[in-house]
Image 1 (cartoon, rainbow, N blue to C red):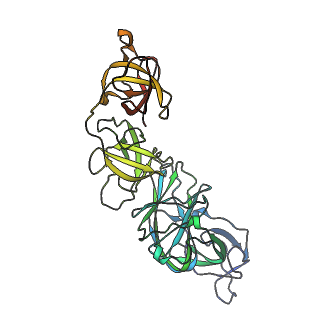
Image 2: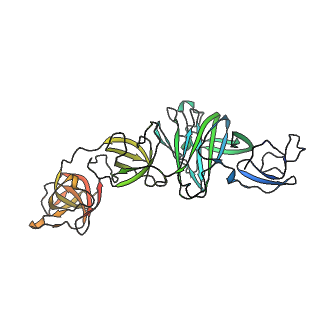
Image 3: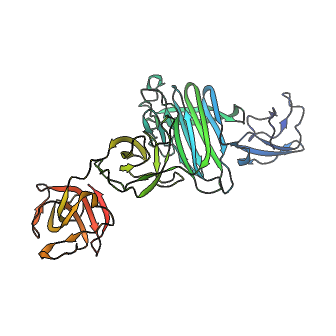
Length: 405
């Protein structure tokens, strides 16, 4: 087990030194063994340091809150998210930069993560997939907004299990206008999600840059867990979703909003999977797990941005359909069908044609639902009473896909 201690180097960093000493005068050579600064590990044998290696096992375990305050610099935090078969799910990073702007990104399994959701104003992300996302209050901007800010020699600090300590190294950091995402208010405790789908790798590297004169922030990293679920309709392109729409989909969420509850809330992340790997597509969904039942959520960038009420009970009875190609098709040929309520326009429902006085399954194709059209005639859909629905039916007239235009 690692033991913390104070040692002295004959170089500016562990990586560039040749010997570790017990005293500041560099006269007492430290015992044989392995020494780490939290990033690299080197073995000392008879007063000589052997080549450095990556030290994943020296990472700080997940689950704790880590606070930092200090001067301008770059702060490194290496977290161990676990390496057993049960250490899978979403790794949730909670970051509070307070008022003074700070940038954050995380590296896991060779991928950079910098997408953030704030409980105050939602989505933040650098336009550079490898850049820092800089958060904070606009009134405390230190010249970052609209400018390219170069920091050629920011002092580097690393968390050693107790506090952030100087490594003796510096880094050259550039912050561009696309990195800066400040708000009128402090962003509060922001959330980043990293999917961990296998036992290994386990090391999560978090980098925080304090580009202004001083910095203070809190970081906590939740150990990976499979995400809670909710029931949902399919995706629609409009918020006008019937309250009777079936909730046949199971999706997952990460809580960002701060109320003490277990509901899906404003600015929460929503995912197709329980690892947090695949964000829900932009659109509208009727869901069950909300404070008030049967709410429609609007999703943008995989984050809930609005809630609306679902539509009242069905008010249409369709007796016509128009053959189209997609939602953008403005002309089509009409076919009369057996009367069907809007509530019955569902995947798995069967549409029956009454063309020619015969009851037969509707021919396969894509149709827009409509009212009172003459069988076989071609219509301009701009001027006729059509619904926002288009449906695709198979050879037996069964609805296999439904889209709200």
